Amino acid sequence: MPEEPDTQHLVRLLRRTLPDTLLGIHLHGSATLGGLRPHSDIDVLAVVRESVTHAQRRELVEELLTVSGVDGRRYVELIVVVQGDVRPWRYPPTCDFLYGDWLREEYERGMIPSPEPSPDLAPLLTMVLLADAPLYGPPPAELLDPVPHEDLRRAVFAGVPELMDEVDSDTRNVLLTLARIWTTLTTGAIRSKDAAAEWALGRLPAEHRPVLARARAVHLGEEDERWDDLAPRACAEFLVREITGSYSS
Image (tube, rainbow, N blue to C red):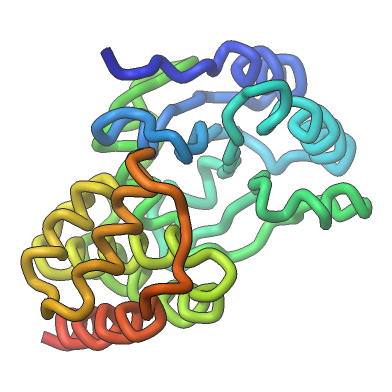
């Protein structure tokens, strides 16, 4: 049986912090794309009527720092969008609030996330609509507009340069995300990271297959993570060439 994500504390936090503006809370990501893996986060989107206030942002960050990845809990990625910023749809969409543990040190130094344009919301909102997994409020289709396919394509392609900057520091995640982008641009489908890697493995030259195969195995909890005996950057560069070709075609 797939592990059920523990989201009750997140729902309580959002309902307590945003009582007058909260429209819906939706699960997405690995939990809805084949099930949680050993390294999977709990991915949640909240839709609100009005932008989160500074005091609410501070309360969300302070609370999430105490629960995300703490005492055996999974890490949390929480994104908040204002309904009027994404419906009617426009590109690039605006992310009103973001919490992710890769930013933990900045939050601990006092950084409070503010609204900013976020092309990454295009695939995220697409996944939310496909998952149709409300934790609070109505189904997501009652709150969100579908993302046009061309906006989905340009959004996933726009994230490639930033990913390449992180090949050495976040190798597994970068390789799996590049495989997912390649899959989406080629097939139009959004797959889980391990399913996207499986798709890509059948299309990689022999010299790059061990790299992506290890990234997938680590993601699934089947191997320990190490890269000193392989060439992950060369594999990533090959994936980027394929991505660029798929985007241009």
